[in-house]
Image 1 (cartoon, helix red, strand yellow):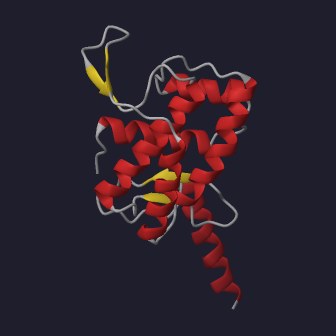
Image 2 (cartoon, one colour):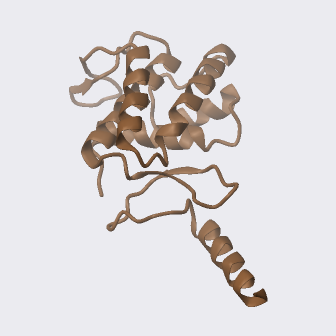
Length: 172
């Protein structure tokens, strides 16, 4: 499965921000820089704003009901400033931005995430936005596998679940 550039960017940024080890401005800024977000450095206030908003995004992952995903994303889209414009920066060719580039970084990232997840839900019905099935793991992911049947964030979590099931069966 392949996301287009806009949907992929917003979705992948969401995953990495939600899975970040902490919500400090330095950590969140590093994640944004890794995704080549322009002006990635967040102030502590912007990081707090973004971190609070990210918790509203988390329910989109692992939600089996597409209707609830759509409702959640529509609520998020209503809260972000958007505006289509042509961007030319960092030596790139002219390309479209679906987010107003004049607003602060946290607001741009929120709009990028909401738009990217909306593209993902519209493209594949949202079933590829997952949350690890191993309790208590809270890692979210995008299922890019061919068959779309991913259930765990990593082989490590899948192995832990399978080993625990094997041990339960062995003691019964």
